[in-house]
Length: 395
Ligand code: SAM
Image 1: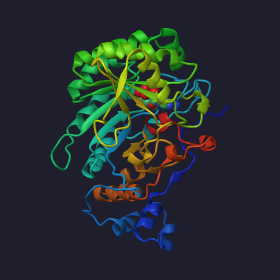
Image 2 (image 1 turned 90 degrees about the vertical axis):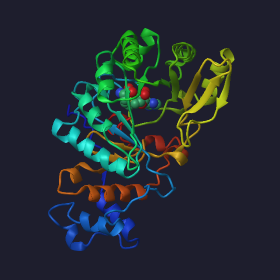
Image 3 (image 1 turned 60 degrees about the vertical axis):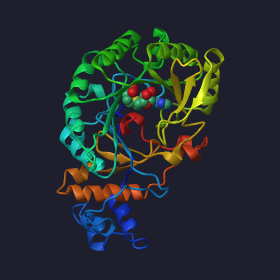
């Protein structure tokens, strides 16, 4: 059987989009350029029309949303096969991950991160696939931690991991400049956890990773728990009790129709209201204000003052109107929505002779055209769209 590929079926041509913004109604690149041997040849002229070099100020999309967060995937590989993300029946031994030369180098990632921060991005989240399987990851963290915003302040640098390799990597990551961390953990029950991660990975090892993160001084530590009906719904209360007792910030995530391989059904989603009601029945909760405008999780405080819990309710309470996130895949594609079917190739620009200003102008052009609001528009039929898998895009 031929190996399955992570390559999205389609790629959006930045150039054509940029040109469309530059000159509405006259959005095709000049005819001779359309036949130029280098497909990116018209780029410099197109961006010069949309965003003269030196263009500054926050990048706003068609819905007035600012580009504020960049999620950077450092690999499409993962050592887990979570049933809701990368089911092992589909992503088995024959699966063709990206070849090394197609994955962005640390230098390329850092260059792009600097460009994004220069445009107003304030938060960088390293993700994957599983980011800790990328070799020498602390070297990348060290470079990213030195980036400064235009006002001279540090960027908010964090990382999302399944925690499998955290026991040995927590301290090196902290020493390299990582400030805080999010660890995914779907159950404390070894059988449930083993079944959900698809490789029978022991929960005890993730708990050791969390302890190592704490010992290393990473703070705050957040825990992500995806809840899928009939799979780990019995873990809601034990997870809530444990996180509260441990002083960890727990975020339940509604099961989402990311990608197109997890067999998502609306019936499998336990909505926020139900998650909160189940916790509230044992440990009374009250709503909290968000930490900042556009915070993805809704926050709930335990009435007895013992901590808080949150829910990321992308299905039952979509937050598209405040979505300020862009995603950079391991192969250098820029995605403007977690549910996208195609991305924009920044690697081609990086590996050509484009200047930072030209790349910034291309990103601004893409962002300015952004009108994604998938979760607002979700129906049973949108679920069938050939969306890019979350591990390929960057979760
Ligand atoms: N490997 C890392 C990890 O496990 O955290 C980073 C990548 S993972 C794709 C990022 C987050 O997406 C994890 O917390 C994971 O549980 C969540 N996720 C993946 N598929 C999901 C789905 N179908 N619905 C909701 N969350 C999902």
